[in-house]
Length: 541
Image 1 (tube, helix red, strand yellow):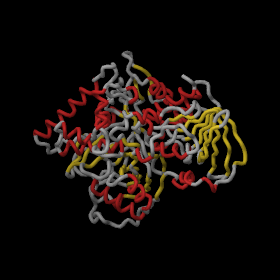
Image 2 (cartoon, helix red, strand yellow):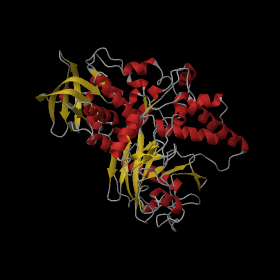
Image 3 (cartoon, rainbow, N blue to C red):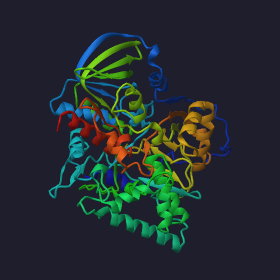
Image 4 (cartoon, one colour):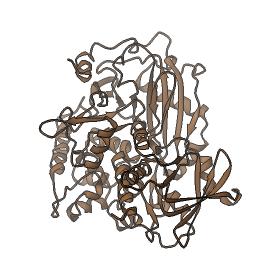
């Protein structure tokens, strides 16, 4: 029986379908946008700003008692809730500001498809990450193990061919590593860089640990490698004579993709970690393969939520945290009912970004959180566009990940990639990712929040026109989401400085912390690990 991946691999060249149309006469860039419907969305900034002035909130009308209160329903908070439930602590309450848990793994759906509003894939994991593999087995993503011990992944969850393509001067090449038009000197630099990565993947420090590992707290403490955290990735590349423009573009793209920051803004350790930490193995996949779903990582979030039965309340703001003789008191505000509740807990887990945790701890001495100014969170624009067709240029056909060389955006993914009839001619939803890295995060955030939909839409359409000239008449809907605080960027000195480790330490065995801010790298595996780490601390293990 032919597997789904094999079927798509064999037939991808033939399945171009009605969506892959040539540009129609008269469909030129700058065509009118009046036929496009859509709206501007985003995280609940208004509710979040309640923390800036809580004096106007009503006094609590009732009191609730729990053993553990979890503030924040992102991956770390949900992971901690699940771990506590699995290990006997079921008397918990999780409160989440947004109406949908998951943090930057949010998702949406329209009449055409489900689609992500943020994180959208999980690389095939390292087989040593036992807790993550156990979770994936419970979700049905990992279906068993081959006789040799390697995991077997659900064929419907592995990203299907064609996976990636790059547009260079109007031609679509396979893969995202630039390969067209390179001279011998540039080719040598690419080969030397990837040989370096192969060496670093197997490198170990004097302590016997991997030089680069996920979760990163399990990486080597050897100064030979950790000193790379003290300089920028861009400076390291220059020092090592990696100067080819195509290579520097590709490495800058990689940093913007995972970190929301440029190679000049992240540390050399982080830049190398992006490549050298990926050591996944599987019986039916390679370490370069990824797991993905139409709704992105919201699939994993939904599974995390379902694997614990404790109460989870969305649309709820936690504020005014104080220690008591027996634990911690936290006031919460229900945005829908406009009522406040006093929650008395023996322990509290703050699974929030550090800038939120800092506000919550205003009345609590003794914590070591990093000041908000020490962390780099660039804003992001995400656009989900429903398209009737995508006029194609020559080369590789429509893929899951579609990037243009030199683009300001990171390209788009195809939410229909996992469907067997992906080239049936029906409309598609594509998700465009655009980190706003042209200026410092503060000014960029303010500008992003102040920009109306009517100004965003022409920018988004103009960007897509550079990928597919003549596409504008085929765009039916364009919903746009602005993340004011994207993922944390691993700036020089953050990952292996003493401040990050200190920020994770519990306060008097009452207040605990878990978030990818405390990892310094915002990926699903780190959020999942952070939740388990904090849950073990709460359980005293």
